[in-house]
Image (cartoon, rainbow, N blue to C red):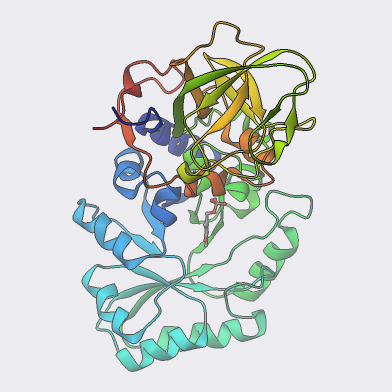
Length: 377
Ligand SMILES: *Cc1c(COP(=O)(O)O)cnc(C)c1O
């Protein structure tokens, strides 16, 4: 018997979330962002759920090649572009669209002289200050790109720093529109937060990532609660032990939790070596939520490598073998992340290779997890 932990990737939820994106930005084409192995979901598994996208955005040439091997004929965008001159022939071989965000990449193209036509997304730094040409250099970069041999279309691209927050996007959008005024070419601007909340940034293309996987760009589940987004990943396990505590007993490494009354706790086969965050709180007034037997309870004590402990007070019938949901349907990954000082993005991406993954292809995404919970052998 394998350990009872397993993850389920819900392909219908991915397809649903792409539909939600289309409803928000009906006039835009969608780059489905599948970098980082589709935010931990697996490129292969995610592709089957997201194949109605207009294109896929990612970072790694190998992941781009995998999409071609899976039969994807449409556009693929390298969000950071390429890194070495020897990558240029691969752009042509696999028909990849590349971001160009710095001088070095322009120079590599000038030397490589691709036959083309190569599709480019020229990146403007509008204030994120990570990648992209400064506004006063952008037009020169655009002229250079345009006159390069082998360059086909040039799309204007930028990235927002605060589309999920107070500051918003207006300051960056103004820089973008001023800098690209009168230049021909489509625009590609919106991450998930801008796709949901800033229609002014819906141009020819939007580039959502996190919402496709059903989590919130802001890290707060309440911000997406009424969008119809559904979690694409759930993480499940079982209780493998139950302990009866007396007042004064402590739980786990560092004795960070002390019982102030008689209580039952359950031991779950899931720890930080499975990708569960070690910083999840098992003490204080905002402990991390967990579902046991479908009932919401919370962590007690510190998460260890292979196990974590939960309060069984709200679920007195729970016993060894009772099902546990760490995140997914009924328990937003954003809530677990918030109790761990991070965001859903990080938890998804950190799902450990040792966790077996099954794929749910037909289940209604909000139905109870019944048929699909058998772990892969
Ligand atoms: C990751 C990324 C996105 C998607 O961001 P989300 O917040 O997950 O929607 C979009 N554009 C670029 C350039 C990215 O690197």
